[in-house]
Every structure is written in C-alpha cells, then in structure tokens.
Length: 150
Image 1: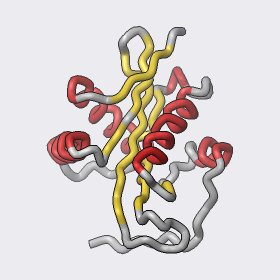
Image 2 (image 1 turned 90 degrees about the horizontal axis):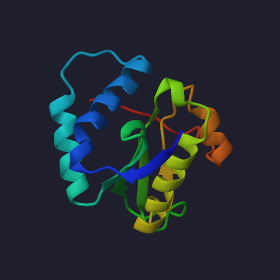
Image 3 (image 1 turned 180 degrees about the vertical axis):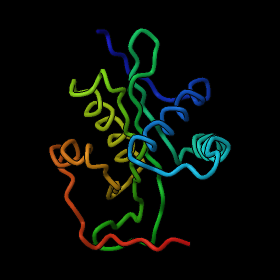
Image 4 (image 1 turned 90 degrees about the vertical axis):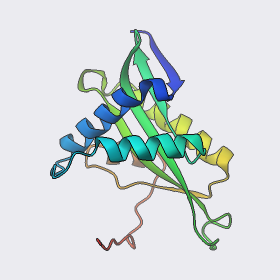
C-alpha cells in the first residue's frame, strides 16, 4: 500500500462529489433531490475563491479518502477573535482502508490549512463513527450547538 496525498482540483471533483454522496448515504441521509448540481456549484465556486480546501488520499491513483474544510467568517468573539471558523466536512475513507491512519493524516492537513487561513476554531457535526477520531485529535463537544431548519 503506497498512499499518496494531494489537494483536490477540478479534475477530481466528480469523484469527490460521488464520495461525498456515499458518505451522506452511509450516515443515513434521506435522498429527496439530486444533490450533484448543488455540490458541483458549491465546490467549484468556493475552491475558486479559496474558502473551501480539500486533501485527498490516493492508492495507485484511486481516491480512497477525502477531507474538506469550508472557511466562514462571523463577527469576532472571545473564543475566536479572528471570527474565522473552519467547518470540517467530507471526511470519508473507503471501507477497506479504514483504521490505517488515513483520516487522521487528511484531518491534520486540512487543519493546517485552517490555521494558515487564520481560523480560530474548527467545527464539525461528527458522525458516530467519526467521534473517536475527532476526540483523539483534541476536538471537544460543545453542548450549546443548536440548529433551526428553514
């Protein structure tokens, strides 16, 4: 096994989107619409303006792991004086490659990108499967997180 890591480019976008949809399915999402056009538009736009970054893990040229970090800005607050927040998403490793440190390496790379961007904090809505990875990395639960669906 010779795992290589590289940044996501437009060339890999279709495969990346396919893997994102697989991840959502695995997490139990209900598919009510074709999400591909919206994902394609989002990633293309935000990769172009630098507010979305992703690292890929490849084995013999095949993408076997993905990561993603969206950068958003809120008014500065004491917990994050820059107001810049990284929203972690698209953390996914193919079933047969799990538990080999690939997700940890991908996570480390997008966190470095968030640090470079000036983020003061990183947030994620973790799947049950991902909780151990994030806790081991140093993420802590924030019991105040609430959501209102429009």
